[in-house]
Length: 330
Length: 291
Image: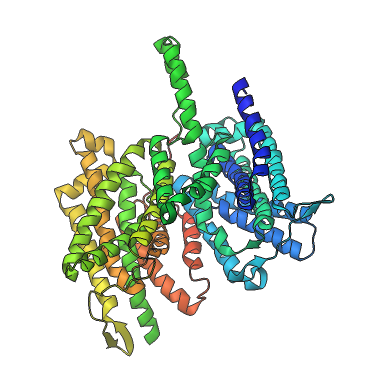
């Protein structure tokens, strides 16, 4: 990482740690939501941005994670166990959802996952013996971890942010490991990856499984954050929203989901000054943003930097530059 | 048996409406690789154009004409020029996000600028019931079927029996070759957007008397159109028609005979089976993968 990048990262972490001290309850709640949803968006960014597997089901995994954690805690299990169970269950289901991806790609895959999301929603709504249906589950307690109570909003925010940091670090390592390279190879040219001896089948399934387990973790944090969960929170709209975070931030850029989630969580709140029209203004801004930077904010910044460097450096000889030009992203 | 006929006819009527929406959806996909996630809202909106025109004192038939014109301009021309054109060259995903945002935009606009309440919508024909072989069949269902079939036949004639239609098909099948042969490809793509706008306006007028005009109507209709298009075949007009009809009939029959709680699940299960077993859809062509 460049020096300016490191400084920006350090500054961002300091802001994320210090800012909630100056905020009231609702502001802290929004920041916690941001941290929780960023985890889910990071998972989707791994599946979609790095491995190139379109998924419209990330919201369903947040739901499965939230319900698993809430139900296990109601059954008397300690929070850490419920948390791990959520992640493992979503890992397993995500692995299963990866199988369609072995057969179909792109828009077909998008629709299979979309159908899966709606099926999960229907199960959450209809199986009242398990999920209490439309009445949802209320009174979810925030955990006490090693004697430290996270019941207060501020404490719970730091817990969420801590989890986000740990997961982001793990993901950072994963993406730079041979696994991460394999995921990118899968996205860029699956047939070539296969012919180079990569087990594309296993990596496709893993891309789904790991991405989904991050969705589950996000859900396991979401349940104690809002303390009341109901099926509608995990309908298709959440999956769309998570996809929006990834694309707006910049799909396939490590920091994309952080910024994307910030926009998706905070922008509608800031726009509340326009009163009833805030969702109209918000959706119009998203459309504008997509029209002017279709590769997301990080994609736009990267392109701008490249363009600046090209202008500064003398043009390379034609033959060399033809070799060096990257393949356009699909 | 009597109730079966009843369910079948009303299922066919809803299915025919789904088919119209799905056909428009596949047309956009074929000519420009646009997956329009706002298609459901495109169906929701023209009903409000009709109501608004009638509020200004226009008779029902004139209001329908105004509504179709407005949707051709807004949901066809403006959509194509302002939203689709700038983003097409960047691949499918940014446009997907943009149409998702557009669906939110249209939904909220209808809610804030018209009404958040469900609005009664005038029916094309009086609601009389016919008694056929002991079954009660509503004239409205039959009228819906008739209009939908007429629309599909008109579209079929346009696409297969006119020079314009053949140019549009050439554009869908191989834009590069079509351009070499002198087909004005860009204009043909624009025409499919205009046709889609007409189709959704007709669907809107047909479905709103049944569901009432409500800003949330698009949510279920959009999904139904995707499902129909994929089950039948993403790249074939007749596939979308078949998919729509299957979906409508299945929806009604499964709610009555299997489980009303899970009625929404059956189309999804069929969708997953179809995609895994025959990804190109029941009637679709296989799209080759490029290395």
